Length: 308
Ligand code: GLU
Image 1: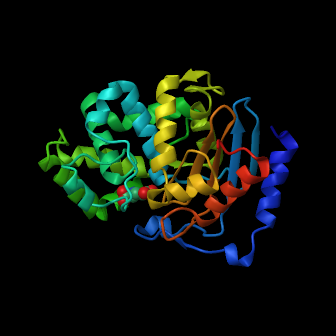
Image 2 (image 1 turned 60 degrees about the vertical axis):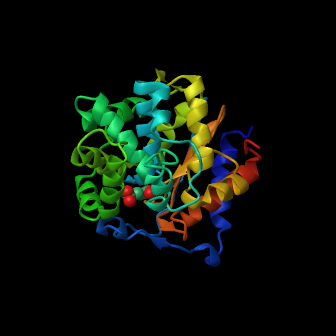
């Protein structure tokens, strides 16, 4: 276990070791709001289960966490509905694009896992069924889990997601045809687009995900978010499905469960030790933060803290 000074120095060391050749990737542009982000931003924040914080760079800047939020909606659905959710969504890596229609056709409207778009949309359908005011209650859950009251949706991003969300509409109607969407399409996608629009900083993300490093209880807020058994399940799904088509690569190089989003954020968990969030907006061809992947690989290598 490294001490306080080590993490801080390790972050500095890693960033100073980046070469010009490492400055690759493209900022997501499928909606204008994401394209406006400063591509050179870089934030890192690590929080230990003993509640020590270590940060680097733009770690307090809020950014669009996009698909990272799918872990939090899954957590809430699992808490509310328990194991019955696995009748409607699988737990296998998809091996195809995050928004693929082809696989859904073969598998009769049951998405491979809760982190591809179709799976996250089914989770939103479950939340729309179970909650009176799904958008508000999901936000309250995330605020309570993280202990950060200022976390919010970005209505600009949610609106843009809706305007460009043709494929998500296609996925939802397709699943409705298979009987795996119970509600009307609009409220389900409204929740989904808002979920994708949540903005958080690296510090807030690391804090919000700390429960996954400590058996389901956030040591900062003392909030019991979910049981240890379900914590294990969520971490397992992150390990296998958290990086689009690159989950194997992330496990191979970094060796931690994690989840990325097209806003350039990545969260990774070391069960029993820490949660870490990295943000660098330029994405590699698989839609994962180019530098974020490199930072996390270097962190577990230098601290010898992979789970494997
Ligand atoms: N908002 C995107 C979509 O639904 C997903 C973003 C992500 O994968 O991070 O198409």
